[in-house]
Length: 464
Picture 1 (cartoon, rainbow, N blue to C red):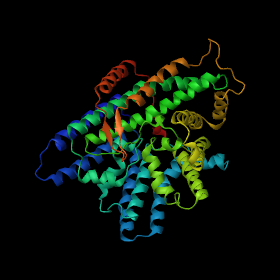
Picture 2: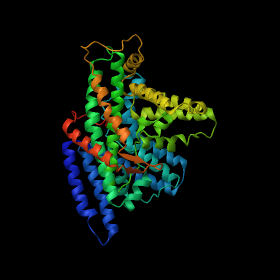
Picture 3: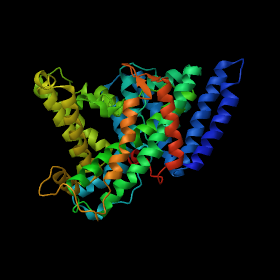
Picture 4: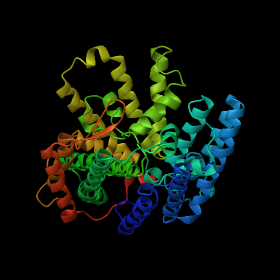
């Protein structure tokens, strides 16, 4: 499921050759049969792609597909909140077991109860997609007449399966019934998205990630202020390029198959507040928590204190969604706390100049990433060093840490944010930036990518 892996690239080429020959270019008299065959082909191919990671894991996909088939019927026949909660619990059981079992065992200090578990690829993403599906059926936002293979397509849809974005049933089933036409505009957008994704992953994330990993592996205790900032700024660039690069490629590949997915990133490091950041970062997750947790908790309709409580609950759980660890919970809590402060002081805070708010926002984001990347103890050390507590600004010339090479490589994500190779509309649609200078810059970056690509690193969100 690694889009930049040589073997997977060959499989992708074979997939699209078969897809275009038999489904895109075929003028079948019975378009309904052709459409059904197309959807079944994508679902089966998605299963085969997933099996290249770990074949037994497809049992979980079948489990969710069967639960989706019969659970949706139960919800459609009887709109009962108790039934909804029972089905959601059954949907959560695999996630809670594989991702959080050992975490709770550690909290309870039960050493003998720990298990050697492999986290199934994409489990968090397709579990949340299915929970959203059940809630939408309960509220009659989507139909419940999908057959087993339709639901399997929704779960296994290969562009999103390994690392998102989190799918919405309404989008997928709409395009399963009526695919997005393959026009010059859609092909152009798809190609740009795929190229941008490749640049982000191979040129930015893999290169800068190697230096970040070296700095951390050599030890945080010996870092200077500049070493600490270089390391965490580097990780900020790495995780953005890595995750948004995957999302860009996923959306581009989906578009070539007639599935129009909304944007998952909108240049988040242009944000001038944490509120703005979460409108731009991992949009499918932030909107999922908004629609399926924040609003059901009451949103902002039950007074200020309840609103602040709801925000904190959402962001702590958002942190734990990323990983079973105290650091992830702290990362989420930091974001939630800052969002509460922004909301409580919005009459005054947002009168500050946008440039100053951007500086404040970036400092907060970079500091918070420390708890995402490192365990709690190391994160506290590096934060102390970032703010110069008993540390020198620079170390001597024999320092084993990389700082200047990381600062230089930060030019690439900065260039990405300045050029904006695609634009995101207010309703989440992507539009290719056809400016000639931008296309030339992207072409140069593609050449640089295949000339100076770094050592391959796994996609960060494969672990979530």
